[in-house]
Length: 432
Ligand SMILES: [Zn+2]
Image (cartoon, rainbow, N blue to C red; front, side, top):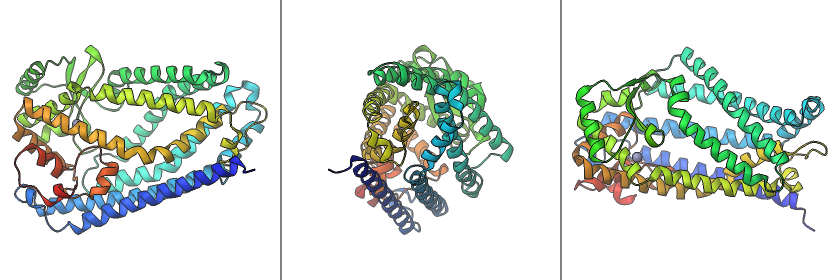
């Protein structure tokens, strides 16, 4: 008889390798494609984008993709280290021997997840540091000081613990005491928690990291309010966020639910765009609301996590699920934390292969939001706003079409602008 544990080990290793090879293949394609088009601005943008800024975008894209490859290789090695090479098993055995179980069944389990989180977080620090103070710095995007970076790290660790520990404890408790249908109750609890975070984020969490001031530019305020009235949209307030404290990248977003909705502009966005362009960007965001994209995305997330919890419910009772990943299940005491941890590590190996579907749906939503914006504001303003944002964020105009299909949640500039107006179609938009 074939050992199911061995079959699972093979499946896990195979998927890990296949995923890594696919990611490397895509990244190499992207780097080559961008490098090949580095020395010429695409025809459709020849009059609007200068060669130096086109080259800056190319260099930035290549540098980011290269660092991404290093991160992928490191993540794969780390996953192997945690699982088949015995990392989690060693950690778990040490905690089981430590006598923490005397304080209650939940304590060693929470300790396992906390220790895992701590070690993973520490191993991730060099990458975050390099990204912020080397890569982003080199291209002039970083505005952070080391002091602010450290303050952020401390704050986010505290916030993560204060919010994360209770929900993880609740999940483990439900897993252990809610009977055979625990996965259903856990799902309900998890969804409730997600909604709570969505409600708390704009008013409680975000202000811990950034300052939010009411928009005080009266002319812009009048303009934006008129747009929102035209679109039948009620928001609690218009805010400006000091995004420039950390990065030169610009953005605008909506948060909150129902009557508590607020519009947030990064100060960097207001600096880069004129009022008509800000209006057009806001109309695009309103388009996402009109087409119910956010609700749809939350619905998909709810459905997928239900499938996830049901799957976890089954896997956690299979011995091969643990042994196949190099972990000895506990003979006394609970295996819930182990199951949860292993599940969270394995899921991305599978979900990576459906990510192109998610990206496709997201790009469709962007086109719909653009179409809505054009129906409400001047199309020319949205075009010039997008062009400025693509340029200021150093997004490449010439991404590899296959890379785009896999990863891009937003259509590349050529496709997006190409749909808006009778511009000269570039070879890029024809290819993608
Ligand atoms: Zn959008």
